Image 1: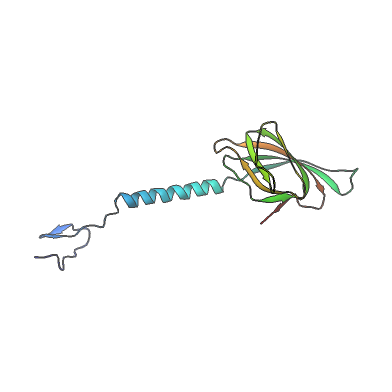
Image 2: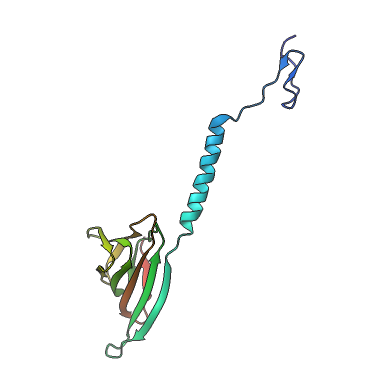
Length: 157
């Protein structure tokens, strides 16, 4: 008696010499599934890692009509990276904790550590802004001098 017509379903592996093998997912499928779950979890983790921005003070500059000074505190979680942007302001950065990597269009990439500073002009495009560490947060204070009516940050495509 051959295998012809012996399709009893996967729940009956052997009847009267007929062998019905279950499709094996094997180690390859298990490996693929584990990696797919890992990629999904890592993507969700990285996507949720937004910079924490805390407004500190905003004051109109009475000697400079229409201008204001704004100070914020920024914390980059481990591995965080900003989108390309620019600021409608003279921008002064002071690193309080950790280290950050900064680069302006046409400039060199620099790594700033605690106590170091960085400057961006109103026309500069900030092409790199990221935490230099994948394991530790970075914190810095930013001081803007800008027109009162202008948004602080503008995305650049």
